[in-house]
Amino acid sequence: CLDITFTLAFLIMLGVIVYKVVPEQNKELFYTGFGALGTYVATILSFHRGSSKGSEDKQKQLNNLQNR
Image 1 (tube, rainbow, N blue to C red):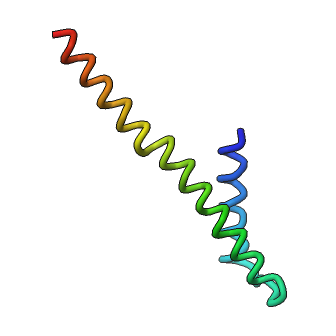
Image 2 (image 1 turned 30 degrees about the vertical axis):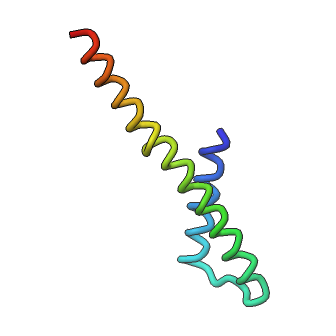
């Protein structure tokens, strides 16, 4: 649930950047938060799609080789 929440928040903030003007007083704070949230979303995606997926695929291949 947290992964989905953070990803949706990132996409909403991206929409705000594209379609709205961020007030000058809040611009630095907004972009800092956006960058931090983007880093967290990248970590989420790399966990679900990246190295853990590759490790799972490798483990399946090793299991197949052992069963031969």
